Length: 209
Image 1 (spheres, one colour):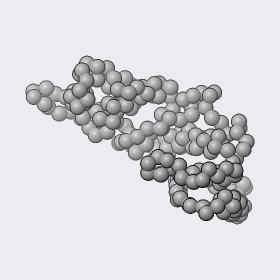
Image 2 (spheres, one colour):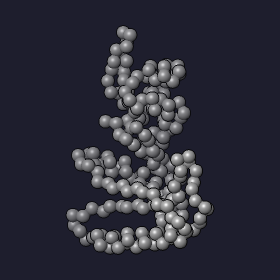
Image 3 (spheres, rainbow, N blue to C red):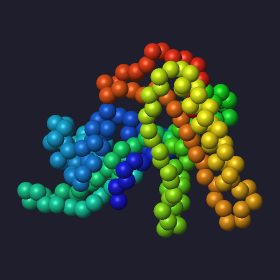
Image 4 (tube, rainbow, N blue to C red):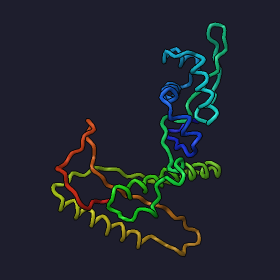
């Protein structure tokens, strides 16, 4: 089954993807198709596409989904294992960002390490849930706020911190024998406009993170 987003956890997977031609091939194989059809669409030699397809299939990024007959020839159909891909910090080994090395919770580095940890953990949790035949319980909340001033931004960060601390104190049970530990990450950063530009007046200082 094709997943919406797959996280690449090994250097082999990352190396197989980080090539312009292979990226185009993966994009062309989001739906079931053959290497020959992709070669025609991209205007590339069939032998060259076949080489890249074999490399992607070896890393588990393409999977066979059937066959079809075209002009008397039986073509093997393949499909990308995911609609989109992300790289886990595991790929970088000791150079991957870790929370222990970043202490300033108001820094962009802290935000990046927190989200990187989520990218690292999610495929592991997904695999374990699938192995157990269970659905992985997750929660995603996303919204945008437009602050009138740096003071409002700072006040929101303070109130949000207090609210989360109060909820954590109410529901956290270290001694619950049948409990399950969840990790919540709340991040905040300036939003990009549809054109990719950053709104705002150059505010600096603390922010919700």
